[in-house]
Image 1 (cartoon, rainbow, N blue to C red):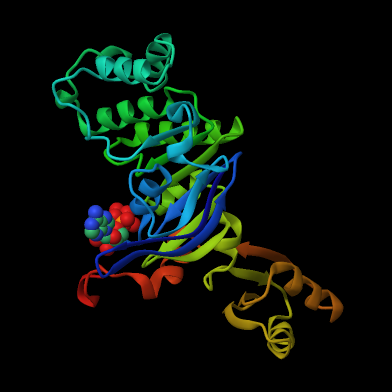
Image 2 (tube, protein in one colour; image 1 turned 90 degrees about the vertical axis):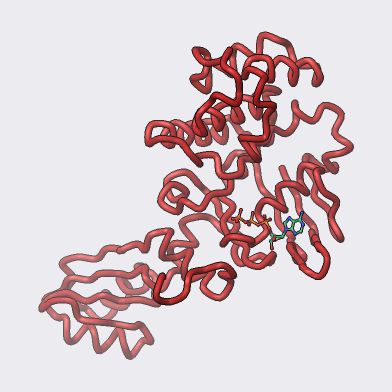
Length: 304
Ligand SMILES: Nc1ncnc2c1ncn2[C@@H]1O[C@H](COP(=O)(O)OP(=O)(O)OP(=O)(O)O)[C@@H](O)[C@H]1O
């Protein structure tokens, strides 16, 4: 588990992270979302002890990263896939990492196989495509068979097959009970991959909730009701404080109340229903609503 308590980071007069408190739990993929400059990479660097917090703490398994005895066996991370010595081969890079972390050499072959790079292991890192570098970075993260994994934009540069592969990998790592914390700007992908979401904006926590709850909370998530008594039901739902629009002769779209309440209100009034279903917002829509006021580097209206 990763525990952040009152985590803050100041760079000069800029507060990059402002009092972040949250737990990232094992056995789930936690998506880490936020606009550019929100503080995601800073958070990951603080978790990995690459930078010191101005206040608060980031703990992995109850201790700060710097106090973990065998860090790569506890936490694996992909931060910047291009941060490799360009003249070194992927294989040599992993062998060196394994050696300096007391990891058996046979793990190198295993992880290269897992990420599909066995055939390119002896190419220089500088000659790898961005997608291949991402795979090598993921191999390095997996090398120590760690309980906690951090991935900063892991699908960056991957082709559709690669994106799918990363999704499956994250799901299976979480399925094995590991803690998987992954940042991404690809909302459609996060919607398919994450169980839980942490959303930050301008360094502050905006949401820390299950994916389903974030989507249910969107004003665009609606309940669609089909009934031969649309006018009568619309009136009684409005009287109960539910927002209603008529979308067809026998169809209403309601927002602001869960499906159970809409169904119960109809049942209690004895109104016959022919259909009752939830029309979910996309994560992209829910995300935009959550972060609307926190986008610092967005395009102007005309470009939006
Ligand atoms: N080493 C640094 N020195 C000064 N300012 C920094 C440093 N690192 C990050 N910042 C600032 O901290 C803020 C958060 O940056 P960070 O890279 O963590 O955001 P992010 O959410 O990862 O953004 P992106 O989605 O663009 O990767 C930004 O305003 C950034 O300019």
